[in-house]
Length: 213
Length: 213
DNA sequence: GCAAAAGTGTTCTTTCTACACCCATGC
DNA sequence: GCATGGGTGTAGAAAGAACACTTTTGC
Image 1 (tube, chains in turn purple, brown, blue, yellow):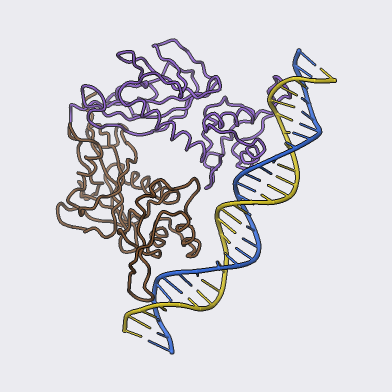
Image 2: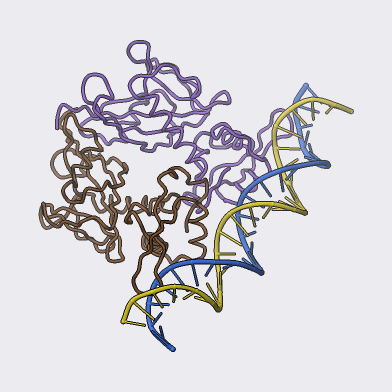
């Protein structure tokens, strides 16, 4: 059973510049890879996942979910490697500290050459993210704590890759009862927009049916 | 990175006696556990999963899907253990060879005392199975190659734990186009029932919306 | 001929989709 | 006062839910 290397990788998504981005670390031979870390003897897999991108992000907690475990022989050059892969969603207002290490953000539709099977892993994570967005309220995890309905709709449109109807979107999300008004408004160009926040008490309110599109 | 044990376990579901059953192997101290095996150096995780219950079942291939990877320190007594868990669906017409080893089938609602976190794992697998049944056509994997609509409906009722309307069920499943008539009928008590089979060409026909209830 | 399971349509309700104009602010 | 994004309702279409009787066979 030994001679098998066990590590954790994380597909970290964030919304930036009107596009969905993934955080990657440099790898050998001009390639890039998913941030990762080896599992320490007394550390949970989730803790390893968090450590894989610690320092890279602000304090605020990210949404983290286990994605899949890849372990076929021959998927990595050299030693037999089993990778437990997580995916994380980072709010768009956290510091994108380009410091510490040489990690960089890439648009998911403009990825560089990737090591091993990491391109395939990202595609799978993306599928899961889209799926998740349709049935649950995962979109909030990519936004600041307070957001306007337009920003939220925009998030869904970017990830799902399709335009949504403004009135239907608003009706659905308000009826679902997963967000609530705040007293504040965001001002900018045009009429100020009311700010909403995710309802902490509405964790599993996600009903049976699809929320979106 | 060493000192971590990597193995694979499988939650094997089958339909029997009008109830959903799970295959378990004896463990220490009067407890039972999910069938499992250690990963060999040149073996894929899926192959390990198959090996974990080989011999126990007939030749026909089972549906196999990765469920989750459990790896928190302290989840198993002794050495730090990471378990990649799969779940499998076995057609109800395969031989239930009680031979080879001492494995036994248990009703999911009458489980014995289980080792480690295996009770929790089975509960999670059951949730996933129910979820899967609603959105996909997974029910067929628990039935023989040919089956009647009543048997299929019965399968769904057992797993979802609720009665379904016969006419609506038939309409929906036929409109979904995932099964097709055969020329044969099953005879028994009452009027003979037409036999259907799963359409091999209808793999991903599963549309956007829920299939069932 | 009767018990047992198979098979078959319609109506009502709910949900979904498509669609266009007025409002509040900054410049 | 006009450009910019915010905010609002309704009607027609589609999907879902509820419901009861006839048919075919074995005994």
